[in-house]
Image (cartoon, rainbow, N blue to C red; front, side, top):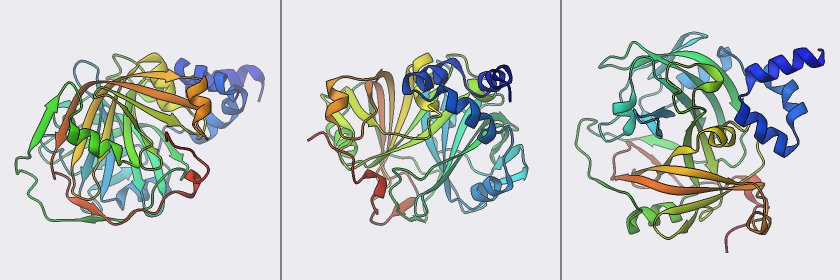
Length: 324
């Protein structure tokens, strides 16, 4: 492949924010070759079958103001199906307390993360919502790729009986409450939704919406007061989907799950990438830091119809440091 051909493929695969992050990490040339091989505009059969066996998946969406939100959808295995390599069908609707309930609309760009914690497998798909109904919706897949098993805590989910129409107790505010901070403080996992552009709806592929996983030792999310969170960013696959999106559009949505009681905490934030400096150097394994300023938080109690057993910590976290 010539340099000019490689440049064209790179430009199609990654947007300017991702390219900037790759350049800072010194992997621009490497990812110019890797990206077009592993990021597709269709789902391979293995990914299609993977989504179909899941009892839950993560969804990244944006509200009418452009704010990204991370959400979780749950159902019996098979609630997600893939009739073709470019289509997913979802037979479920988000709970009324979930931001996704209001954000889903025909033509909306959304990001999907299928993750199987007990095997540490995960795959991503992004696309456009179609055929929204009371029973569910379809997604036209515009981007599909796999992710590595790094930093995933192994835990097995179990579905429990709950009335999906039952109202949930929730607490909202512009700052974090003590209960919210307690949930965050013990978290070893959270999910983050980002978007490449303020007006990413009706736009496919690299300019759409993403949702991804972040894992660490309990306490890896540092809480500074009731409105600032800081997390280390460990070495990954060098796609820089999340970091790249935050470079161009620094709003994000965080989702924290209480794996014991089913609480969900949605946090809308503005993000800042701390590329280097003494704080980065002081946290073993951190390549950079992400600092989040809280704009809105919503704590929904015991709403998730999943429970998990004890987690097996990712072996990739053994050499990583802590804030202490």
